[in-house]
Image 1 (cartoon, helix red, strand yellow):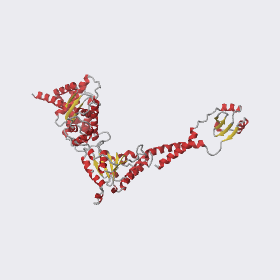
Image 2: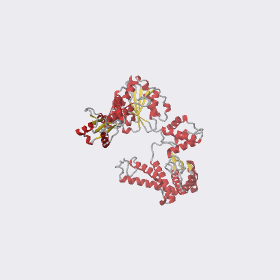
Image 3: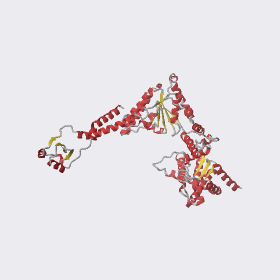
Image 4: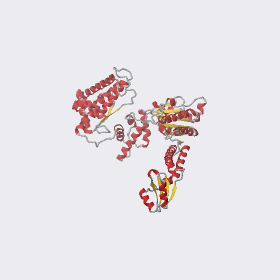
Length: 574
């Protein structure tokens, strides 16, 4: 900061000294022929011979006359003197114009660097790093992460009474690394930890250590730990720590050297302080694979706390926390919402309730109903409804047949997730959608479930071919094909689910897979497509009934889809 202030002071001083010269109006130039006439009429009072020309003083103004090559002969000087004008020469030594041309660019650079450094060292609203005391967050405000909260209890105990640990020779981890997908509550848990322990809390991000001048980022690391020791017991929370802790690559550029110096300073600081001082560092990232090994070794970030996506009970608990400030209508079941939101993070669930509240406010009602929550979930999963999109009757029927094919295959396959709803109302980029929801969270997916998903994905294109013919199939199955290809590729190359390839992991060579692997992927997809066509052909009446229902109602819920399919199967059996 002292260097920054010095640069700024020098810039201000130079600006004060040079401003009169550069802010004063420029001296106008006079043509040589005009000067000759003025000289002949004895109107020139004084001539100062300078490098490059003449500074001429007339009765009413001063002008500058350029001379060829800046050369003035002795005879010409005598001619000027004969006209009655006073003649003088520029004093040797200091040339303001020359030195100003050198100093001004340097001063401007110094001013810019000084301002950047000062801006980097100070924040507009508060001093950096900001220390917060009396955090109001508690573990009760964090739902769906019971295992993580249990693991952090010993940290709370240490911060409250460190002597109980040191008496028996125990050492609390100097660093805790919270690892998990975005939106799972890593920052909230860190705040709740500080609130439960009743200690000071300092929150920064990895990007805070980027700076325009060499050495500033390293100094910020030192400043951060220095302030933490003064405020101990204290928690330092570094969000997105991968921005400062990436693996060192030994690059030769100045930026690489500055990055490594900053990371080295962080490593030294974490080794340098004594844990009995009550300073614990908590890092958060969703890219633990890119962190430098030296950062993860025992004595630094030697403990990892996984903050994963919540399960169904965790989602219900998170919804209950977010619903404290939302007026839910009577009969709204948070358990039902949790069941229908697999894979949602805590941030996603909070956004879901907020979107539902926005829908309720638009309608002018005071409570959030089940329909509002359904609309909010559909918007998040499928995109906003596009009822204004105009499509022809022919395309509308084709979309209805396509979605009916997906829904029919899902109803006929026991291993498939149940159909929640089918619609031909455009959402986002899709002209229609079939939403399926699992009965429970899955952590291990069997082959029969994957094959059922593939048949359902192929059901839309198969229905188009069966109803309209091979030449009438459309581009509407592009996303289905991409999804199916992704699943089959992982089945063959990662999960060992292909008898022909075996239980081996296959790596790509550039962008391509081995030829036999690509052939096996195509064989599986072809088999799944033929299975989908067989489902459609064997239950053509059910397909037509589903398509007609979609054309009539635009959206059909899962119970109605299953009723239509069951009715047609019962009729055929009779």
